Each structure stands twice: as structure tokens, then as C-alpha cells.
Image (cartoon, rainbow, N blue to C red; front, top):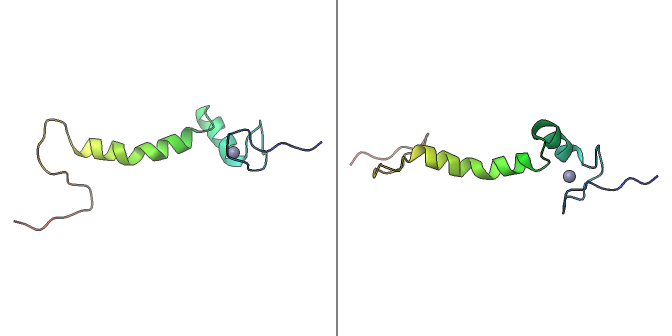
Length: 71
Ligand SMILES: [Zn+2]
């Protein structure tokens, strides 16, 4: 029997378990969603910006690890 590749569209990696490749199977086991890890990675920078910039503030955004010269 020839095994089909990963069932996630445009993945194309070798089948590992449950119809997924190694990466997607791990994500499915952990989050019940084979694409959960990729979604989280894309959202992280935006979440960091939103956390650093409260809506009621008009001050400049200061990200962790970044310093400006005193004026
Ligand atoms: Zn895959």
C-alpha cells in the first residue's frame, strides 16, 4: 500500500499519522487543529503591538528592548 501525502492543502510532506505529516499531526494533537501553530505565529507581532499601545494613549509606542534618545 502506498501512503498518501499530508492532507493539509499545499503541504505535500510525507504522511506521518492520521492523514497528516509530522508537523501537522503534532499541531492536531496539541490544539485539535492542524493549522493552529501557523495561525498563532502570524498573530503574535500584532498582539504585541496592541498590548504596548493602549487605545486611550496618544504617546509613542515603546517596544521592549528599544530605546530613544532623550530630547
Ligand atoms: Zn503537513
